[in-house]
Image (cartoon, rainbow, N blue to C red; front, side):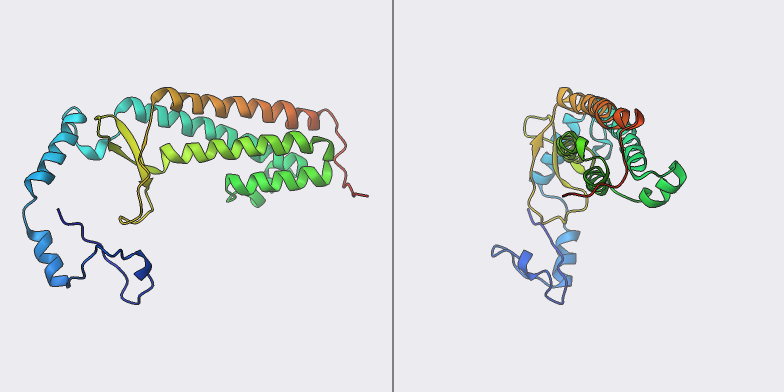
Length: 217
């Protein structure tokens, strides 16, 4: 079975051309694409559709996994709102001004900003902040696996996640099995760490911690 890959003519992608690839012309590529699918390919497609319960592969993963993805996205979104709010509070900004500064910031930018602000203005909370930010970063990395990767049918006909959506077709795949239990654990972890962010950082600030500029000796 042939796999056809296109590369830029300026040579900028030559590093991705492996030794087992054979250069062909556009005409030859069109001829290969025009050929009917091989029996091997048709068998794999049939196995995939069967594993999906007869459903179209474009609707993969199954409903129960889509619902788990939804829980992860909703809980992480609530967590991000709390994270932004804490950044605004440490900065001494109201919500409108805070949103103007952080509206397009990614979670990683928010975490870096929070650590810098806490170190400057509330150094007593720096240990808790650094520890929480490290764990939050890990949760978002796990979230990306389910939300931003392609879902496929694995060898045992169970769902797997492969490469990220934006990676090119010739990028190396990192297939990983998934389970509903771990996905719901992740969704729950976002809720739990949001609570910790509130109790360890947000609440102490509201109770009147000194957040005036702090200079190190």
